[in-house]
Image (cartoon, rainbow, N blue to C red; front, top):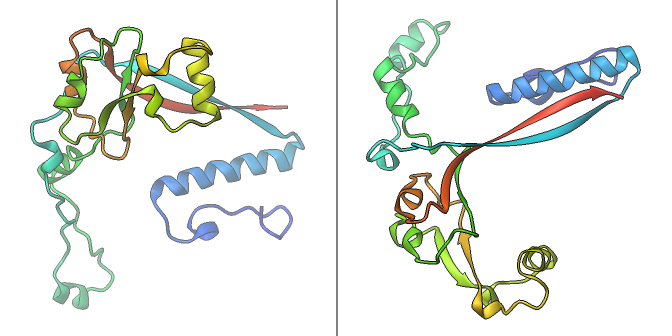
Amino acid sequence: QTTAKGVFVAGDLAHGTRLLIDAVASGKAAARSVYQYLTGNALEHELVKTHVVLDRYRRERGYESIRRVEVPTIEPAERLKHPENVVEIGYSREEAMLEASRCLDCGVTPVFDGSRCVLCGGCADVCPTECLKLISLDKLEFDTEVDSMIGASLGEDADLTENSAILKDEDRCIRCALCAIRCPVDAISMERVTFSTNWSSL
């Protein structure tokens, strides 16, 4: 809602030029504000997280090294001659499919089952970006969250030198699934993680 009572804005008018998905989110936020304004009822939300196991997840060969293709545009002379024309021509079907294949698909991630892991190190060995590392628990940097997780899993008196953890650098993972393919005991699965928000009136 704006400073003017009963006037709501969204998208570029509210935030300036942003991405399409930002406009969608802004429109939904405005709709909730309108609902609350008209009904007087507040809305509460619940975040729902789901995991879907992808049994045969594989990536295209060489997908991580495909170079970005700039969007084709009309020639500068044509722009001057017809300033009303859209500058970007857009991709051809083939170019669009090639660009789409570059996506790292960040919604898919390897999930580790510690109860099945035999600490062979195969996942770390095969990782092309070296984003996985097996480390003894006594080498971890501890905080309250780590302490509580270890206590819940192993008990308060566990010998940390006899237990290990797998550390994963999310920024370096390219979702290639080689770790899941390499694991001899199926302790790693590729899963699509999605988040959705359920809204309800109070």
